[in-house]
Image (cartoon, rainbow, N blue to C red; front, side, top):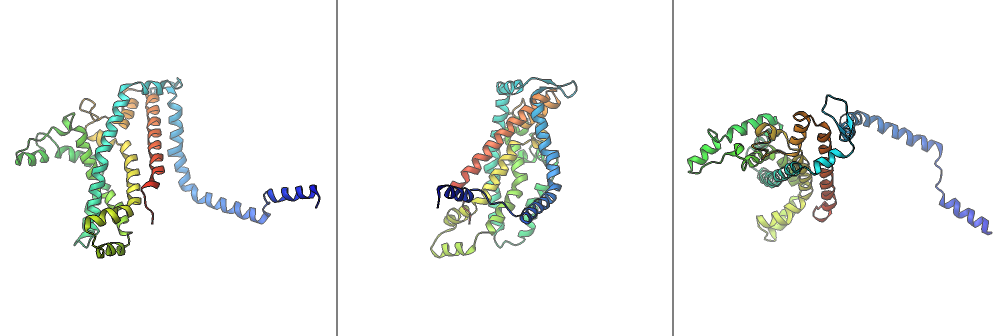
Length: 314
C-alpha cells in the first residue's frame, strides 16, 4: 500500500460518517415533535421567567423610579448595594431565618413521617390534617400566628403564664421577631417535608429492617444505619428546596412584622420590595434581585456537587 493511499484511508476513518437522508429526516421529525410538546411549557417559561430575568438584568444597570425615563448608570447600583451596610444586614437576617427554620422543619417533618409510616389508626386522616397548612394561604397563616403570638392576649403567652413563665414580646420584640416568623414558617411547611420524607421511607425495602432486627439492632441503630442513609435522596431534595425557598422568604415577613420592629426581621426580598415600591429605586432593586439569584445559584451548585459524599442512591 502506498503512503498516499494509507493517508487517505486514515482520513476516511477519522472523518464522521454522513448520515443517510432518511435518517436525518427521521431525527429532524423527532426533534420537531419534541419541540411541539415542549412549547406549552416553554412559552410560559420564556415569557414569565427568562424574559423578566433578562429585563431585570437590564434595569439593574439603570437608575429608574418607575415613572421617569431610565438613566444608564452601569454597575453603580451593584457597587452601591455591596458597599451599603443594609445589604449585609438583610442577608444576615435571611441566613438567621434559614438556620432556625431548616433544622426545625426537617426534624419535625421527619418525626411526622416516621410516625405516620407505621400501622397507626387513622393515619390517612392525620396525613391530610398535617398537609392542610401547606395549601393554606400564607396571609391567613401569618395572621393566625400573629394572633397566637400576641404579647398581650395571645394563646401562647396565656399558656406560658399558666405555667408561671413570662412570655416574650414575640413579633413586637426585635429579639423575638425572627423566631416568631421561623415558628410560623416551620409549622406551615411541616406537611410538605413530611410527604417527601414519607415517600422516601416507603421506598426503603422493609427486609433490610427485618434483617437488622434479627442481628439485634435497636430502633435508634436502625434509624442512623439504615433509615437516614437510604432516606438521603429525599433529604437532599428537601434541603435544596428549603434553602431556595428560605432565601426567598417574604410573605410571612410582610404579613407578620413588615420587616420590623426597627428592621430586625427585614430580609432580602423585603428589601427588594421596599426599594421598588417605597423608595422608587427599581434599578437597585433589580440589582439586589440578581445578587440574590447568584447567591442561591452558588449555594445550589455547592449542594449538587457535595451530594456525592453523603447521598446514597439505591
